[in-house]
Every structure is written in C-alpha cells, then in structure tokens.
Image (cartoon, rainbow, N blue to C red; front, side):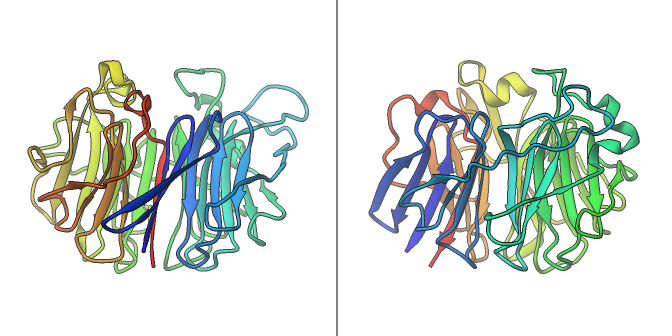
Length: 347
C-alpha cells in the first residue's frame, strides 16, 4: 500500500492504493504552505498553513487537528515590529530522520521552532535573525518580511540542520540550532528546497531561485554545475534513491512562469552523475506551457520518484525515462494551483 499526500494551495489530497486509488480531501479552505510525513511514524502528518498555523494528523491522515500553537517569539534584531509578534504563517516543516518525535517548523517572519515530542510542545531556537545579513532578507511579493522556506536534517548527524531563507541566505547549524552559520562560500541566496542522500555523507543539493547548487562537505562550500540547465529558477530537487550522483530538478525562467498557471512554463531536468543537465520531454510527465513547477518526493526503491504539478500526480520507476499518471481523482480547479508539498509513504 502506498499513501501519497499532496498539499495544494487550498486543500490536502490523500491518495491510497497501488493500481486503484482512494482519494480524500482535507483542510479545504486553508492556505497550505508545507507538508511533512515520516515512514517511522506514518500515523503522524504535519501540514503548515499561512493563515492558521500548524495542523497535525495522528491517525494517518483520516483527520487533522489544529495544534493551536501560537508561535510568538520575543522580538529579535533584524526585524521590526511589535514587541511580541504572533505568526500564524508556518512555511516549512520537517521531521528528523533520526527520531520521528523531533519536528522542526519555520515561519514567516523567519523563525525556527523544534518539538521533541511529536508536536505537543515547542521550543524557539533563537538567534536566526541576529545574523549579519538578516537586515537584507526580504520576500519580493511581501518585501517587508521574509520566511523560512525549507528545513532539512542531515541523515548522518541529528544536530546538523540546513535552512533556506526566502529570500536572503542559506543557513547552517551544527549543534541543533544553538548557533547559526550563514552564507558559506558559494551558497545560494534564494533556496527553495534541499535534498540529502542517505548513502553519501556530506552531499547536499539545493534548488534555488538563483540556480542549482551542490555541496560535498555538508553545506560548508558549494558548487554550481549549470551546463545544460536552461531554466534556472529552480524549485524542487531530488536524488535517485539508488544513485547519489543522479538528480532531478524542476525549474522555470522565473517566478511567474513557475507558480502561476495562466503564465506557467516549467520544465524538469535530470543530471546523471558528472554529465550535463538534460531536459526531460515527451516522457509522460507534462512540462512546458501551462504547467507549473513540479514538487518531487522519492520512493524507497532505486529510480522511483513521485511528482505532482497542476496536471496531477505522476510516478517514474526509471528515474525520469518514463512517467505514468496515478489514477487519482483531481478535483476541478486544481489545474490552476501550484502544489506546495508532496510526501509518499510506502508500506
């Protein structure tokens, strides 16, 4: 049995099955921003929303509850505003691969919180906006603010945390968020997503609005292999579960052609090892005009990747050579939405 969670802008779709799929819809009417689920605790699913905080399921997605957690931090330098600034906007969430009870959440404005009990209680990890560059962080559609777009825990070190600020910095912690390091050599400024392969220590991929980047030393320094990558507003990135050196990325020429269906023109590229990027076309996965940027999630087997865009969910078993659309109900109106997250649990 495979369970696919797809976070769309105004609802969460849960699809269960293999050949035949049962689809249910949850959190309708909320503004979804992010999604996380772990095979180590499949009954728990976390969904971040822009206007109503964090929601959690403890029954495998059958129902969701608002955690009623008001992330109200003390005022920090680098961000003006009220002395206590309440944030209902949860923009990033991730579950530690070392312990499914350890959950990290990022908000707008940029703060990070950690739970060690599966979301029952939260600790604010202070100091993020004390970094020197924080005064220059801004999100162009709302330039008065910024947010945590991505969080990733290193599978080799539970205290090593990777953070993407939209927009302004890549931030690294090596002690579980006690201290922060910003903008290491070559890092991107507009990191949208990151991925780490569990078979290659130190290898980190980043898909950013200012291009693709890869680190071989746990984020301490970065390279930019761009040959063949014609569209460099990158959104989602995923390595082949069976080959750490092979990677897929979704990209467009800019934000308008990535996220807005009426002006969309997005593509998927594959980089096999040390070879240049190749654009995947005619493989069964819709790309090009009218298609928003895809979100990716890996399966457990080599070559298996799931993708979702405004045309529906898809799966490849040969790392992009061919894709098939999952026979999942796709309600009217979703063709106009850009997905906000994808998670796959394979029993």
